[in-house]
Amino acid sequence: MKRVILTVIPIFLFLSSCSQNSNSTVILWTDKPEMAAYVEEFNSIQDRYRIEIVYKKEPGYTLLKTNNQSNNTVDLIISDYLNSPDTLALFSPLEDVYKEDAMDMSIFYSGLLDLGYIEDELFLLPVSFNLPTIMFKKSIENEDIPSFYMNSKDIETASVNFNKKSTANFAMMGFSQRWEDEVLFINAVLMNTNFKMLNTGVLSWDNQKLLDSIEYIKKWSNETNGGLDKEEEFTTKFLYDPSYKLIEENRILFYYSDIVNFFSIAPEKRRNLDFRWLAEDNKIPVFGNILFSGIPKKAKNRKGAIQFIHWFFDPGTQKNLLKSTQIKRMDTFGFANGFSSLKEINKNELPIIYPNMVGNIPQESSLIFPDPLPLYWDELKTKVIIPWMYMQTGAAPPDETLQTTIAEWLKQKS
Image (cartoon, rainbow, N blue to C red; front, side):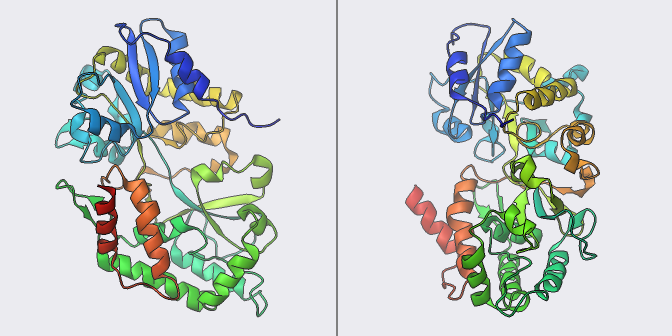
């Protein structure tokens, strides 16, 4: 049976037929298609409130730009990067959401929950998050592959041994950190470059750690893969095929993915694949695009928004929604396309749905949650930081620093 891609637009249009003037209507801004199915379920099981979805490309940015407009009607926002210093203060405290034991806050990952605080007040609740992986052939017999985590040294050691099986023209190659752009950035994160946005609005990072990560990738190309020219020749010659096919044919040993994209590979094509968590010192970095929910200060239907939040973050609700997405064969992983912010959902429910997750759920203590990042982080990372890193690891790295490159980009963007 073919997987059914979630159709979003008709549901949005249907939900938008509700009257925005009704006291029962809760206006939800989101850019996440899977929210349509969750809202539809909420609206079908009770008749006190109706959630109306309004699709916004960048809800946090839209809130920031329209916050002072009198016609800015929104009661609830679910999107990523809402904990940016630019937007966090635009939300109202959530004490009335959990006071008098209305919600058990211990069900959340504590480090994840901390990201929604300003001092001692909670403004945002986390919804879901994503993690990096390295995937390989399930049937492979290799003592170089640990049982749960893989760090850069593990991957390098296994790649060196794999490359020894290759011919002089490198018809096989274990792994290159330059095959997938995101790996360049993940490598910098694993080396504690620590990108973050300060409360002053300034983007900060450890520049020496960044340069160290660049040198490490260059060394990998030269020493493990026989030189940048051989690495690029292999990439041009073979990497037009999908990663799972290259692994299946023993053309490569490893390929980078994240857990969401790993499970987006069709079941029949990933049945021979396995994965390990990318980590350093047994610590897995959580991606910066954590999904948050929050009630803006100017919300007109706070009671309705709270009602939805109580339902949405109930473990029983999330368990039922997970079952529903499987029945509907929605093209989404886990809860809200990631690991749930509720520990018990990941521990108890995901292994039932995804056999690859049996014995592979990370402990809370093994997760490193990112510092706040700017609203424009995805664009900045994709258009500026990663291209700069790729050029720096190439044959003719430019002299321009990352700081200068970012400053020029921000100037053009303003």
